[in-house]
Length: 115
Length: 111
Image 1 (cartoon, chains in turn orange, yellow):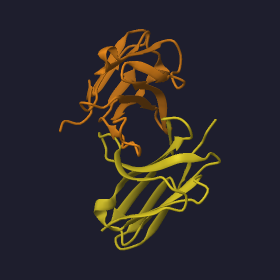
Image 2 (cartoon, each protein chain N blue to C red):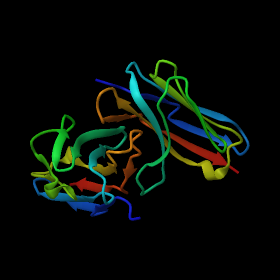
Image 3 (cartoon, rainbow over the protein chains, first blue to last red):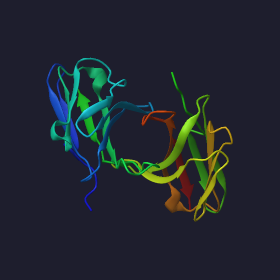
């Protein structure tokens, strides 16, 4: 069974540019989460999709961040325009709705560096 | 702001020693998970505890959920160099599917 895959694994961009991160959850997982770890800080929740619907986006930093999950399969997280403080590791996780204890499976993350 | 304080942040011990990592919060959690993360990888789930007072064992690792479901501990017996890594706790906030993470404990076990 393929795990959660994220692309790219690393991205280096200049301030003001746009970057799009992609997450492919485990097939059949309706829950999809985006998390971010900024240097020296804990992993923080960004948002949660159930299928194609945004269940909770309270962790999104500001309106420069846009997450989509068209069709309820893969998800994208776009940062436009990127700022220096957006640098960090962006993790995607997925889980099955039918798993009450909700085992979260994490991707390897995308290391974003904004220069 | 919900916080999950994890301690210690860093721990360096000799092979064979025991250790305990703590996660504490003022928030009540529906469940609490412990993860281990290797460099360049995402967190990998070790265990989920759901019931207050619950104790789970995974080989030399013992996980306990506090009676009030606000805190948890991870105890490793006879640590091995292979236990070296970053250990994270994450609590599921009541009534949500949102998890908050602790800052992590970076463990190094010396041979």
